[in-house]
Amino acid sequence: MTTPATLSVTEIDLDTIATATGRVAVLVPEDGKMSAAARRVNRLMKGALARYIESEAFEALEEGTAQDLAFPVGLQAEAVQVVKLSRSAQTELARKAGAAIGGALGKKDVLVLAGPTRRLSDLALGVLLKAYAFTDHKSEGPATQTPTVTMAVSKVEDLDAAAVTALAEGVFFTRDLVSEPANVLTTTEFANRLKDLEKLGVEVEVLEEDALEALGMRTLLAVGQGSRSPSKVVVMQWKGGKDEAPLALVGKGVVFDTGGISIKPAGGMEDMTMDMGGAGVVSGVMKTLALRKAAANVVGLVGLVENMPDGNAIRPGDVIKSMKGDTVEIINTDAEGRMVLCDVMWYTQERFKPRGMVDLATLTGAIIVGLGHDNAGVFSNDDDFCKAFMKSARTEIEGAWRMPLGKSYDAQLKSHIADMKNVGTRAGGSITAAQYLQRFVQEGTPWIHLDIAGVASVKAPTDLAPKGATGWGVLALNRFVENLIPAEEA
Image (tube, rainbow, N blue to C red; front, side, top):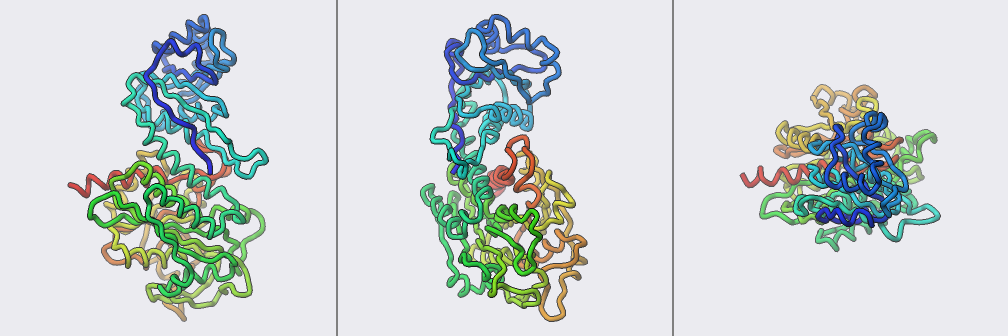
């Protein structure tokens, strides 16, 4: 598993700058006014920093980006990285600036001369998140030693390194899970990795196929019955609150999706290793909550299956009875995620009576057509609950866009031989998928469905992540949990 760089916080000491090894990052605002640390760097470099700041190159540099001055005279460091950032920069720019540092980190330590800069946590988080690289299957293997990021600040108490690291650990856990190939991350291996969270104080329970059969989770089991990998449901409980009902997070964990008998085209099928992205996000959130000892009760449940074509696989036209008792006519075996989620959602409500429930899934290609790769689709039956999440997503700069629900869409799911079909037409495909799931939300349960098909894994680097798994949702849901606590106490 990938480990974030070691984050260290120290009070700034101008006399140590000259002997710092690795890299030195110095923050300079747009007006070019140098801090005390920048002035010391400039003096050591015999005015080279000032000459760069006064140049057209610095003027053209966008805020939040950086330029290297290699092998600086007067310093032991291999490079001085000049980062253009206002001291009062807000979250997005502070993280972008941190990402500029993290993106150049490599295996070398870095001394970040942050000084009086605000948004220190965002700056540090940007450094850690951008420095991610999934190398477990490269010949050189994962790094045996992580670099150290030393944040030199005016007041040490202004930056909580443990809290920032807890966020990065959760995001990295999600990214690692989403990045793993399906021959490695089987349903059993996934469950084993979640069992490791017990070391952090999370209560973890693995429900095997016999238990799922006894519970009546037939739609979930139907999805996995064509695979040699056993279907499982993993229940993770973090009990950091008082006696309040838990918030429930439910994730789709299809470790590989061929489409089943309704098989997908060969082109791009290799990307279906990420179809467990919802379960990956739930897992990452649970890890972050445990690491930061969140004062909240949260339960995370993930349905782990593999959707394969086989002589025992479900067929289009089959009718399956859900745990709730509704019968589902299978029209397309590639609409399997909702069949996994509906049983787990029903079980979650029956067992835990949650204060609210959020499900996450790489559910539909239709949401990518509608929203691209910048926003997850958000569906909800409760305006206040949804607004609270949307506020958290905005705070964490994780794109989310609310989508409609409505009874008129249910007509597409009507079946002449069962209570419902598992898929409608191409029109409004992400909405009808949400309408399907809403049938398994009990009266009085605030609910949000997050369709993360477009944001879980991307083909090009983002501000805070390399190409591939993003870890989208860990920050927003962690913030959502944090924001729910004072509301409950009030």
